[in-house]
Length: 392
Image 1: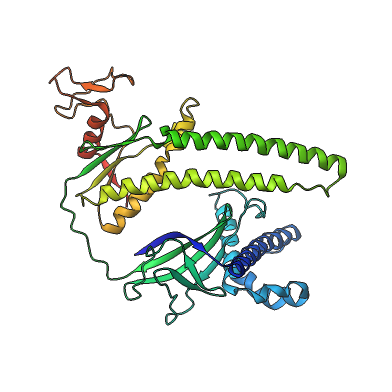
Image 2: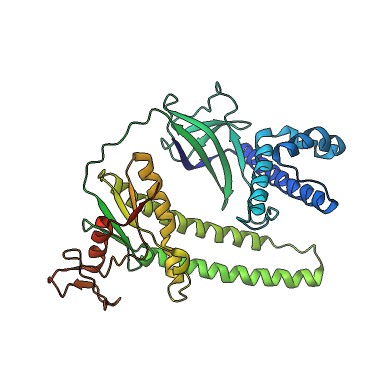
């Protein structure tokens, strides 16, 4: 089984400089692949895939362009992986599964540095507080003990390093061998996701909406002010360029952009940490199965009154993380159909209350007199529904 671990690293100044060079080289190689193939298409030549392009690049292009020989001083696998990424994006466009790939930009922070396990005998060494990477050597980890260090049961296959908001993050793919199945004999759990409260479990556990927290609201208020400041600085720089020419630069604009990125990263970290804690508390009980509603988030976002609140919740991210964690532990995940009337159906007798309003927070069955909280009743129906699909 392949498991992905993401953590922040703490490189030295020299290592950070090398990482920036590798990221810039990968971005340059990605754009070169798109540019050459676009020129070949306009001239009527056939398309070159990543492996053919890599051979042509090493044998013909570098000989004809000696100024680009600096690419040979960097890690060759990162350059080749950039060609593969561009080739994958082009083939996805050919299959009409995505839009035409754009050139990667330095201003948007696009690009990553890739490292791989070259051979079966090679081992990417990882200790509790550091990891040894190609061309970089030992790099310190900020989160100690997160990545497994047992080389007999966990093998690091490949990974990437990316810079975001002035920080460096490493994502590595670890192959877990000799996986022992988990004995799941606990009570099954149904989860109802909502806007008033983020998650309501069938056992009565309630997880509040983190976006209503005063601290999160304060951070979003700071973000709105920084965005207005960034907009003013951008308009001032644009007017200065029209007056002075293209030589006009503004360091304050770059500083404000970095501050906006850091605030966005702070909000993302708060949401990620909260969702991870919920998932950990759910799988810690080792339930027989976990039931979740198959929400149509894309159509839910079309409601202009609730679209912002829905986007803040991160329903799809929570579902993807929950499914991945349950798959790792061998816990089945049941997806209830999105058109199942879980909120209107009585869990006790199965009566469907058609006239149920959104303002009715307590479910009262007119047939059997069953009274329960609306969300807990829905989570019980999600847990016990028979019309479901397995998530994996």
